[in-house]
Length: 497
Ligand code: GLN
Image 1 (tube, rainbow, N blue to C red):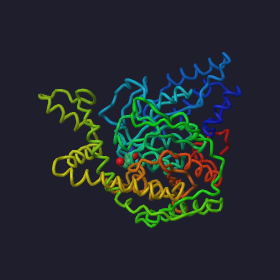
Image 2 (cartoon, rainbow, N blue to C red):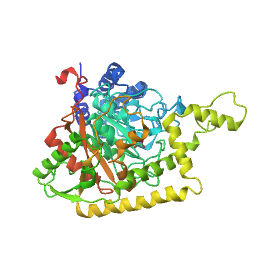
Image 3 (cartoon, helix red, strand yellow):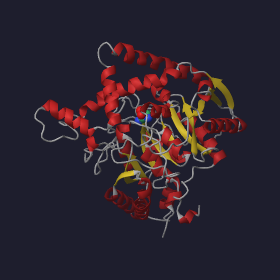
Image 4 (cartoon, rainbow, N blue to C red):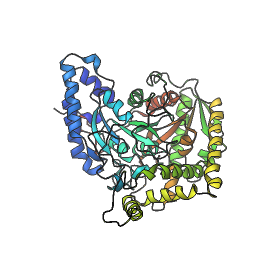
């Protein structure tokens, strides 16, 4: 029997399991078969964790058979796949880098463990830009992932595998990480709901660090409710991440409330930004009009210092990356070039071989920016800008409950189309300031662009630890636009799409 998993939401899968319509083993088998059959076109997966998936499914079925239904967690029977910078015992964690090729996860990241504890079926590990540096998943040492909506285009990045897996109906849920836009931008390019919660909402323990003060884990899904269900599982304090906060909310609680009376901000400088394509601008304006018609009050807000966000991000990000990536020294971790005569030679050769061009660029940039004499001019200033941007958002959120903005300036670009790294950095022009300030942001699909015919997401930005505000607005938009679709060419037969 075909379950038709591709078109089912996480909530529906769990409900079907509990109602006895199908077993967890049937779910796991079908999900694994789909990945095997369909992922040759997309290449979202770096590793499929077949054994773990079947074991998890058997445990769930045993609990069902024993009548221990109440013990089943909120993700019981739900396939979930993880970005390959998240450790999961029984899989490798490569960060899509030659540096960590073959590295076996020595422990399991808290975000992954929480999904396992909630009863998920772990499908495997997903492709990404090397060490999460990038916006297209092209910098993966294992080859690019393709956008399920157009296989000649990128899925975005760095969590491109996560967005593509969900868009292709390979997994109803995936986890990604976002340092400057890496959950939201691929979410927009692939037309899925993609949430970067407030910094500190989800533990970073066991996730390979890029920029520790900016990194945040979050879910990608096809419905707002599924993303909220995942957040319920993921969020909370973890004693192994001192920045993780203990704030217990039910993220699904206010999804049905609508936006009547909510104050929604539009940022003038974003809407008039050079480089913003007219089809993306049109979608943001259309979403604003729909929210206004649904009873929200639109207001313009100023974020006077966000124009410096990109400059600050490309100082702070590389500085933190430089520090974090120093552990890959071929002694304690990582690829080692054989036959070197001295330790210095081994460092140099191993790191030159193990890291790809973008990783090397970030490391060299961070090293330079933190050197004496240079530090004051760049790093120190960037930290000052960080304070100003954080204040800008705090002030704006004195006036509005949520901000509506573009996610990325364009829809998905072609594989190989952007060769210049600084041009690639522009993909994050609307997302980095949110990581700098630390508040929550998400991409919400709002249909296809009128020129490219490709998915467009709008960004919803919430005050720190008020992620439920943006989810509520997202749910209202979902009622207007309908739930995100599985990409054409990937919907399964039963759905008849
Ligand atoms: N694309 C951005 C960068 O290259 C953001 C990456 C991320 O969020 N991990 O740094």
